[in-house]
Image (cartoon, rainbow, N blue to C red; front, side, top):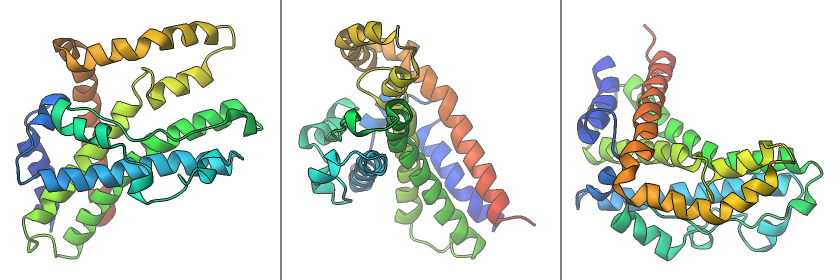
Length: 243
């Protein structure tokens, strides 16, 4: 049972190489066999991510997304065709952003932070769900007999959701991490952040698609992802495989 539980962790590390990871290169290095797993994972991850934004905004009193049909788990309402295709071409992409009208919030700062956090946290929870399923199968003695595509899909499902969790928390517009900083910033600093936003997206794009990423984005992923994946493995192995 312990051997089966370690199988997925070894599979992830063998497949993705030794930490630190190089996220963009990994996106571009998916094999033909992996493309369906990646496509399915991104469809689920993007859909749940945007739904989480819409759901939390609605719970805080903003019906904008709900009125525009975004309070749904139907991928058609969330996926952006160009943003999805670019994942496989350029190593980054996007879904359709959820519209939010802050004037509906009684506490705009709290609501804004909660709405922004909801998307990345949904990706973290989905990664946890994938690991939980695997360790549950291992605890039941069923993991070792599964066909190869099951750990392969779970590997990518966990890995990509963790990447999206970290990526979306980076402090650059238009990512969720930047929106959180906006809401946490003192009122006097916000006008300067608004000025930065006009150039921040361009700066971020340069950091992502040029060799500068090895000095900026890659070290963040290489530091945070190993901590996340190892911590989650320790949690679920302790939860399911004690004794």
